[in-house]
Image (cartoon, rainbow, N blue to C red):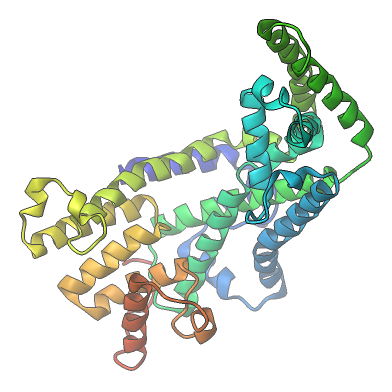
Length: 394
C-alpha cells in the first residue's frame, strides 16, 4: 500500500511538471520545493539564511493569515448586509457556518422560504447573493490546505532544529503537499480579492423578493416547487459561469491527479491508524478492539499497534495520532533514543517545540503532549539523541 501511494505521487508530479526550470515550482507555477527535491536540499532551504529562501518560506507562513484577513473582511460585509442575524449570540459566526446555511436553504428551498418572518428573508438574500455562492466554492478547502501547510512546515522545521528524522519518500510526500496546498491558498487569495467588489445589493434584493413571492404564493405545492426550481436553476447557471473564472476552479482541474493522490493518502492511512489505536492497550479506542486482540498480552498489543501505525505513517507522515502510537510503542520496546524522533514529530504537528517554552507555557497539555514533551526534555539533559543522517535515511 505504501509503495502504491508513492508511485501514484511520482506519476502525479510528473504530470504537473513544466519542463526543466531554474528554480523549483509548485503546481501553480510559483516558487515551490518542486517535484524532485532531495531531502538535503529541502532541509537546506528550510534552514537557509539567504534572502530568496527566507522570502519563500515567509510567503508560505503568511498565506493562512492573509486568507484569514480576507475572510474576516467578507464576514464583515455580510454583517452589514444583515446575514449574521441568522446566528444567536452564543454562536461565533464564520464563513463556514454561513455557507452551511446556504447549503441547507438550497436543499429544501420551499420549506426555507415559505415561512413568514425575517429569517426567511435573510436566507432568500443569501441564496440570491451570487458572490457569496461563488466565494463558498473558492473557500471550499481552505481549512484543509491551511492545516496541510502548517503541519508540513512544522515537520520540516523540526528536522532542521529538533530531533525529527525524515526519509526521502517522506520528504517527497511532504513537499508535494506543501506545494499543492500553497498553490490552492494562493488561488483562494486571488479569488477572495476579486470577489470583494460590492454594489450588487439591489439585484440581490430583487431576486430574493421574487423567490419569496413564489414560495409564499397561494399556488399548489408542486407548482411552487417547479417555479422555485426554474428560478434557482437560473441562479445556478449564473453561479457556474462566475465560478468558471475562479483561480481555484481552474487549478483544481489542472491538478486533479494530485488531489486524487492526496485523498488516497487519507483514505489509505486513516483506517490503519484507527486500527493501531485499537491495538494500543492504553488508548481510548482499546476497548473497541476485537476480542481476540483484547486477549493478547500488553507486549503483543503494543507490537501490533506499532506495526499498523508505522504502515499508516508510511502513507501519511503528517498524521499526529499515528505518530504518537509509533512514539509510545517505540519507547515501550526500545527506549528514549529510538522514540525521541517520533515524539518530536508528534509535538511539531501539535505546534509544540521542546526548546521553546513559548509554544507550550500558556496551553494546557493533554496526556500525550505531556508524555512527548517530558521525553524530549529528558533528552535535553541526557544524551545528544538522534541526528538527521546526511543521506536522510532512518
